[in-house]
Length: 292
Image 1 (tube, rainbow, N blue to C red):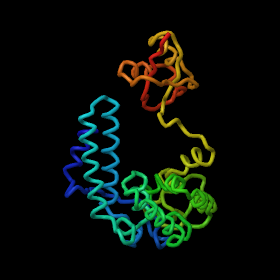
Image 2 (cartoon, one colour):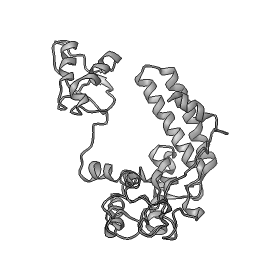
Image 3 (tube, rainbow, N blue to C red):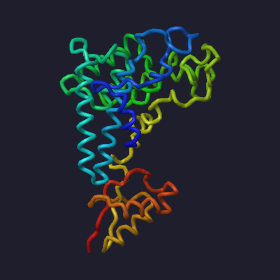
Image 4 (cartoon, rainbow, N blue to C red):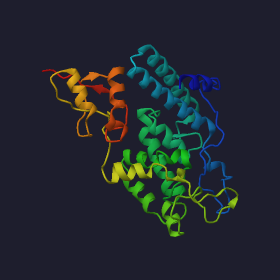
């Protein structure tokens, strides 16, 4: 990961990056026969897409470095992320309109999701996202697959789950319901898969589902993983007994207390329940050192 980020960092200019080939792939086009939109107002700029995700990756690497007890590396990643966030807001944010770049739905969603928007502007940027959905796209999806990965959760976290629900239950173009109304049994590659040029038009292409399924589980059904990912409360007379109990846990235990060490983590990952999927398959942040 570090090597990849170093390589991609070579494309950064003045703390922004525009290294992108496909853009916000498969934005709903203005003409039902088109594969890709030709309308610049529907397209999210390369600088927004690439900078947001490079920034997000820097924050992830900083977190991983912290988990691995590499504070100096974590500080370096965070410092680089801070510089990119500041440049992003300085050069791409319009303080009058309260939008990034041309104000597409995706150009609102990504900075909000990755916490790049200054606190004093967050509500205004979110309000512009809402306005874009309700007015410009008449209460319909206006993102491609990049923005769609975060759209439903961004709306819900921002206090508008009603709009997320509306997007879910729409039956007119573009929507998942529109696909169903037109006899789809799987997700199409294009929002207009029934009318677009067949040159690129798969009818079994899960990418456009975005974060819909996550939203259905976490926000509609209320089934959400623990934010610490894999905590196990294990009770034993010694550290070894605690780890033994953890290794045999079926998921109802969680671990908390002491920072993860590599031997303990390897034991957890090597356990049969973990490999069988009966123990949370996430990063174990804390492991308990039980006392008698």
